Length: 307
Image (cartoon, rainbow, N blue to C red; front, side, top):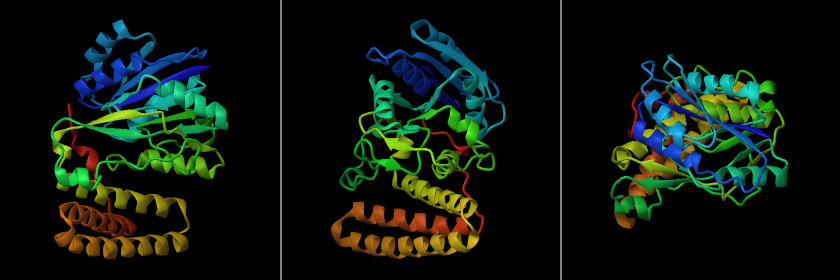
């Protein structure tokens, strides 16, 4: 079994160093696998080269490094696939600000085998570089949804995923290069993977840990992320569905989120700030859906958080 684990990176040397150390510590529990790590640096100056060169000494797997000079997440992701595909049966992705648990890869492989999955995805657990505001803890605003192992999903994200390499042969183009700085090209791709009939399965014990920098531990970042997610989801729906279906679906979802979010934010004056922030977040998401419905977008990834 040949596995390529891919990371794209852009000027996050500390995060990349931790991610590579966590990949070096993977325990495959006797599975017969040949692993290769593929790092694509989206900085045309090649700023991550020194980190990768230093990591090779402790890496039990081969580590390949390449530069993708065209700035943008889908360019870098597609370069990963180009480098990994000729010599891989499975292609995994994690982010450069994440640390996979030691049994991460083994658990993805275990669940894949148990459920005959084409794509296996798992949870991203937040860690924090500073004190988390009390309202964020109370409102669980940095927690992502989790599901029982084996749950069928209709999408996955490149912050924690393992895909059968043959998926990339069937579903082309891969990561949509129109989504240069908006994010969401992974959701767009895996939704197409699901629509092509491939099986996407959740592995709840295959955890990766994402470090949240101080710059993200603020209500403003939560609002911006929700707005961007709204614009991106509207783009995906418009792109993958006939407009007579997509338009009323997006419009209905936006009205629901705008109204319910406003009600929740108003009730927050009694319940507490966590309700206010959560309600405004949904208002921002609904606004993003409206803007995305008319072709607007938000280039969230022009700014890099963390180091």
